[in-house]
Amino acid sequence: QVQLVDSGGGLVQAGGSLRLSCAASGLTLSAYVMGWFRQAPGKEREFVAHTTNSGSNTYYADSVKGRFTISRDNAKNTVYLQMNSLKPEDTAVYYCAAKRAYQQGYAYWGQGTQVTVSS
Image (cartoon, rainbow, N blue to C red):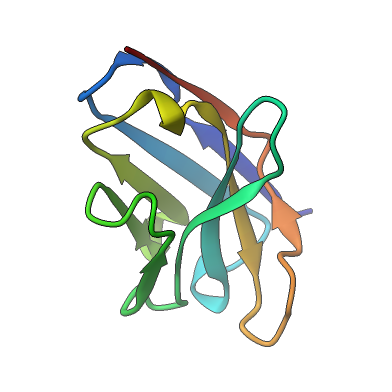
């Protein structure tokens, strides 16, 4: 059974940093594209970043480019999202997700971790 467990969220002041982790089990991480998404109150879930199977390519939403970094450790079956220079508008529940490269949509989702940025 595939399971993604998100952790690392919390309350931080604007300008601060957090590192989110996504621990995967029941799958071989190197076979999956891994992404991070977020959903703020009253808003739709939005894409944040993703990394290809090997981690050699990464993609970011314009709103986080230059501030967030996605990385992965396939040996540890873990994906990370380093978030720097946080802004109040980054406040959301953050979810990691996994899909095979040939799949259009993400097949597996974590339970989410809350990030709150105070001004």
